Length: 483
Image (cartoon, rainbow, N blue to C red; front, side):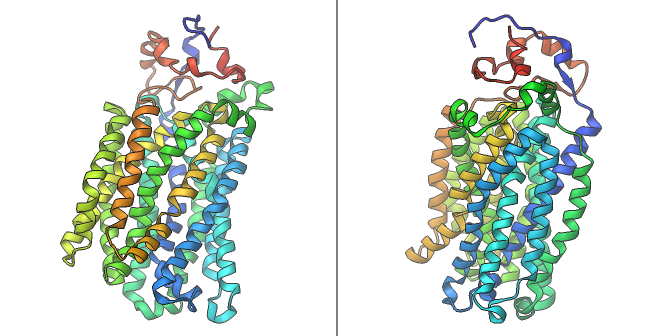
C-alpha cells in the first residue's frame, strides 16, 4: 500500500469496549487456560511417579527421562491441533473453538487417571498414556493461541498488556492448583500410597474443573475484531488459508517462532523441569522441592500483572530485552543458589528465575497476537506458537534432563537458558515492532472510554500504523479504511 494515501477513517470505526464484557472475556478465557496448566502442573509434579508406574522395567535413573519423553511426544500433536483449530477459529469464530478445545482437554486429562499401570496391563499402559497425551497435545494446539487471540481482541489498546497478563495469571493459578494438590496429597498419603493409587486423584479432579471452565466460555461474547471482519460476508468465505499464511505472512511466522523459542524454553524450564531437577538431581525430598516451587509461583502472580502494567506504560519491548539480558546475567547465580543444600538459598535461586519469567508472562500474551492480521491471526499464531513450542519448549525438560545425565553437570540448565536468551535479544531488538498502546495489525482502534475517540481521530497515521504492511488480498473490511 503506497505511502501518503487518503484515509477514510471515522468515529464509527473505533470500538469502545464494554468493560463488563471485557472482564467476562478475560475471566472465561483465563479459566480455560488455568485448566490446561492444571494438567501440566499435575504431570510435572508427578513425573517421577509416572516414570515408576508406566516404565518400571527401565533403569531408575532414566525413568524420569522416559516420563518427560512421553510429555514431549505429546507436543507432536500440538502443531496439527494448532492448524486445525486455528483455521476453524479464523472461519467460525474464536469462542466456539475455545469451548471445543477445553472439552477435549478435560476428557483426555480424566482418561490419564483411569489408565492401569504397567504391572497390570504391561506395554499397553505406556501406549495408552501416549495416546491420552497426544489428545491433550492436539487440543492444547488450539487452546493457548486462541486464548491469546481472544483476550487481545477483546481489550482496549492502551491496556492490552495488563489485561492479557491475566491469561498468565490463569496459567499460574492452574499450575499452583495442580501442583498444590499433588503436594498436599503427597504430604497426607505419603510416597508409597501416592505411587500405589494417590497419583490418580489429581487427574480425576480435572473433569469438574473442565465443566466449570466450559460454562464460563459458553457465555462469552465473540471478539469485536472478529465481528467486524464477519461483516464482510463475501470475504468471510475465504478469509484464512494455509497458502495465504505462508505466502503473505511468512516474515511474521518466523518472528513468532523466534519469540516463542525463548519464551517457552524459559516457561518449561522453570515450571516443568525444576520440580524434578530439585528432587532427582539435587536430592531434595519430593514434598520439600514441590512446596518450594509452589511458594515461588504464588509470589509470581502480582509480578506478572505488574509487568503487564509496565508494558503498557513504557513499552513491551523494553521489558522483554531487559529481562532477557538479566536472565543471561543471573542464570548461573540462580542455579548455583538452587543447587545449594541450604533451603533458603535454593528458594532464592528459584525465585530469581520465577521473577524473570514474569517479565515475559506479563508482556508476550499481548505481543504475539499483534504480529498477525485479524483474518489470519488465530491460524498463524496457533501454527507458529505450537511448532516452536513443540520443537523448543516441550522438549526442554527432556533435553536438559538428558544433558545433565550425560555431562553430570548440574549447571547445564543455566547454560541452556543463556543460549536461548541470546537468540531472544536478537529477535526482539531487530524484528519485533513495539505495539504497546497501538491497535492490533489489521484491527481498528479499541478504546476504553468514549472520551478517547477524538484523541485517536487526531492521529490516524498512528491509529492505522499497520497500513504499510497490508497484503494485496487483505479483507475488504480492512482495505476499505484506506483509499
